[in-house]
Length: 133
Ligand SMILES: CC(C)(COP(=O)(O)OP(=O)(O)OC[C@H]1O[C@@H](n2cnc3c(N)ncnc32)[C@H](O)[C@@H]1OP(=O)(O)O)[C@@H](O)C(=O)NCCC(=O)NCCS
Image (tube, rainbow, N blue to C red; front, side, top):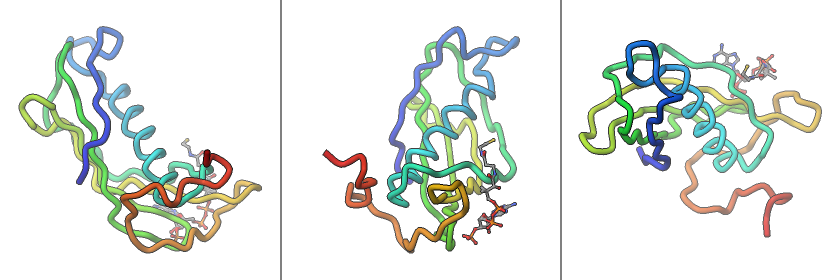
């Protein structure tokens, strides 16, 4: 699993207990998964379909740096399933895990469309043509 994105826990990300608000973390993970799916499926139009059990393992505090990791675990016909983890950059302690985050590849009309991919890319070869320099 690669940890691509780092987030700095700021005052607006805290809950009433003074620790990281779960909603902020889920927003970061959903956005990170969208970016990952766009790159893997070569399509800017992907949506979240499903998230499995979300386990908050430990908390983070203001000033902590959270890194977010994703790995593709299944390429379906129109979907991509990923596993997600957030951890503390300093201690590597796990903060959250989600076994299945499923995104669906859409066509121009917003209907599920086959993406044609079966494996992970580590290059930018699938960047949607419309966005290439
Ligand atoms: C995404 C959407 C177009 C899919 O429509 P649908 O009727 O479920 O389409 P399908 O039944 O063809 O399923 C599409 C894919 O999702 C998968 N899927 C459907 N329901 C699923 C579920 N509960 N869990 C995991 N995967 C699921 C299917 O297996 C299929 O993948 P595959 O082609 O790789 O086998 C539709 O559900 C939708 O618009 N949802 C709202 C998405 C959204 O707005 N998300 C933002 C967060 S609110």
